[in-house]
Image (cartoon, rainbow, N blue to C red; front, side):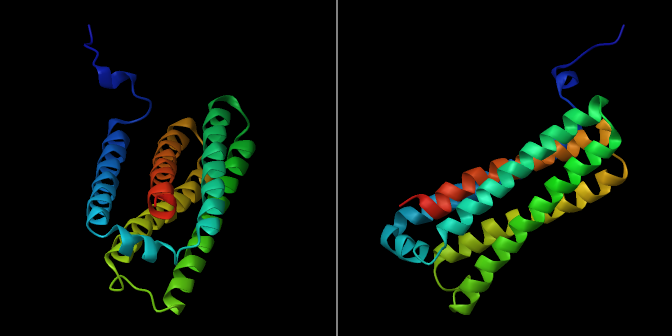
Amino acid sequence: MTETTSFDDLPGDLMIWVLIISELLVFGAGLAAFLAVRLTDPAGFAAAQSHLHAGLAGINTLVLVTSGWLAALAHRVAQDGPPARTRGLLAAAGALGLIFLVIKSTEFSGLDAAGISTETHAFFTFYYLLTGFHAAHVLAGVVLFGLAVLRPQPATVQPIAAFWHMVDLVWVLLFPVIYLLR
């Protein structure tokens, strides 16, 4: 008789969940530090925040959430659908990830052109650390989508979709805290 544990109910491999939880903890600590430092200089943070383009970030939110929806569809289709459809959904999710990165790099370029860097204000130190680290995760997800297109089986697609949902979740937390919270 085999003993079962609560981990047996998790979809996919335990290690993807260890990765996801550790990444959420890192981003959570970064957001907590951002909010704590913000309390020490609310006027400075508000002034710095005014240099951001909340409209582009809003578009990026729609792009990333749509990509997450496509990743979820790819996971569902991978269960019993045609591999070509799974590949198409994965490619579309990855393409939206690339669009996110293009928009984010446009925002970074605009700030750079305005002479804004990590040393301009504590707000921008956190902004670049949190959004840059998130962008690195988006890039990793896009690469994973590309690899999954080559092998669109459920065991491949599921952990990548789970990782991508973590990337979505982090952005859904970063967006209001960095761009909207006054």
